[in-house]
Image 1 (cartoon, rainbow, N blue to C red):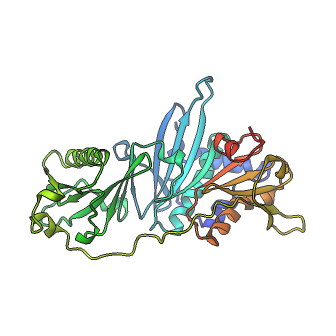
Image 2 (image 1 turned 90 degrees about the vertical axis):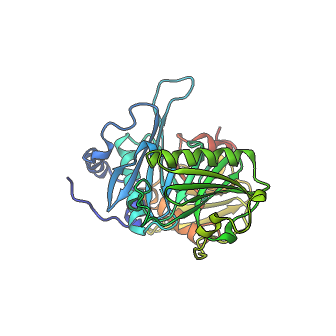
Image 3 (image 1 turned 60 degrees about the horizontal axis):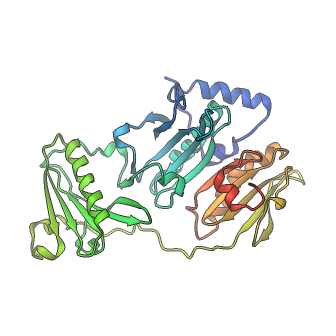
Length: 365
């Protein structure tokens, strides 16, 4: 097996473009990655997880499940209704507790996958809990779990198993299942919860929860039971119908944590910044705030367009090598200085803009 290389965030994001020689080297490197062999050949979803700087296949039965301590690569291959050409969106997903090494490798390998697919994919960065609408559209529901994938969730040894609490909550049109601190105070009447006690699974329905949340929780319970070989006992509880001393509450004796991110006021102002190396050093320059149109973008540069809770990196066809290389890195750096560092990021090239960018920037249609 090819020896794993350790990548840092800067390397992963500065490697988007280069000279013809560099591109050839990257193409050869991409073709030597075992994980990419045979991918993107037909419409559908493929997911990989980063394990010790290696790209490993994520089991199809676990698609839509993501560990907070991991980073993943998600490839969606599709065709437009009126065409036969295969098109791609490739996302790297960062768990809230994923290490810099892990998400740096995921970012680098995303670029490598892009190279493997002849630069056809649109590249995206996703952060747990703040995924783009496009990313969410791939799944009926999304489940977040504490720890890393090595934690495992199929093998259950009754005397060793530590109970877990999952919140099942509807957000917009999607329902998210999230592992939360195992405390009674976390139970809210407007949501549904799953108390996973190993060989007994409890579904706790809040008094004002929705039908959709109940249905999705029941599906999640069935999946867990299936993963345990059908040996788990399932119990459905209604908040208003059980005693405050019910045995289920005995499992909720964990400690509170502060994993939740603070709410931030979303800034709806449109921000346009330019990546420029006119003086020999790459800088990020302010261009304007307010409405941004296609006329504001010139082919000889790369730009950051921050609009509608999404950040686009737009690469002009005549942008310099340094501007192309640094644009994504500057996008990451820019977001770290805002109140919304988790904002989804999409890289688009001039002439290859996706529908979301076209709908966000007038004059691009």
